[in-house]
Length: 83
Image (tube, rainbow, N blue to C red):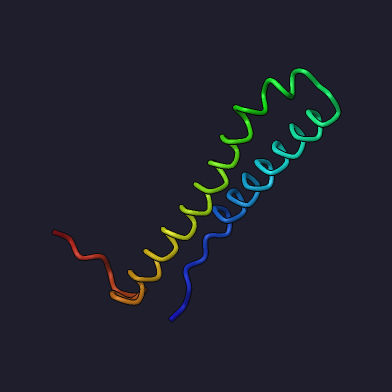
């Protein structure tokens, strides 16, 4: 069985994941350096970015398993059945 390939989706999800981590590190570093703005943003930004990271991982894992299940069940070469 051949796995589905989603190069652009995977790339965009990886970029979003990397930027979410970057935002967390920048806010934490700025807050550690004593920035009042970063301290004010941290309670909002850090949980939102962590949620985004978890959502991206969940979407990737959840939809990937659905794709594999569909391919295993119906095959890749068969046309879709119309209802």
